[in-house]
Length: 97
Image (cartoon, rainbow, N blue to C red; front, side, top):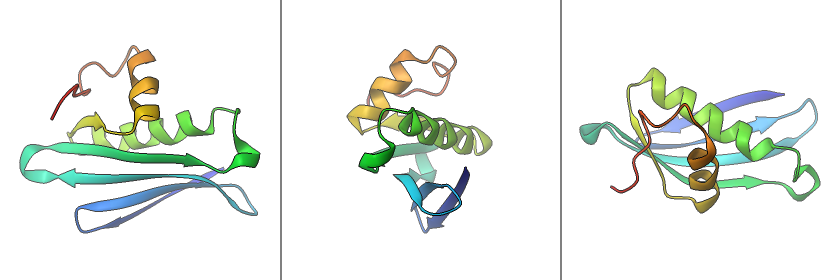
């Protein structure tokens, strides 16, 4: 599996791919003046659902945010649910913007 981060301006898409096709994607927006990274949407294509692929995308987004010293606001309800169950993200998790 391979991640690709296509950042454009203050937004972007992280895709997760295998050798043949896209598994899923996560969209985000960055507010650099506030050091905030907003997870807007997580999508896993139906044939890959139920295998933790969405969580992998959220973890990759967290890694990217940490690299840039951004706090993360999970606007997406799935991302919020995943992050609320993770014990090691409380230092960067924003519960409201």
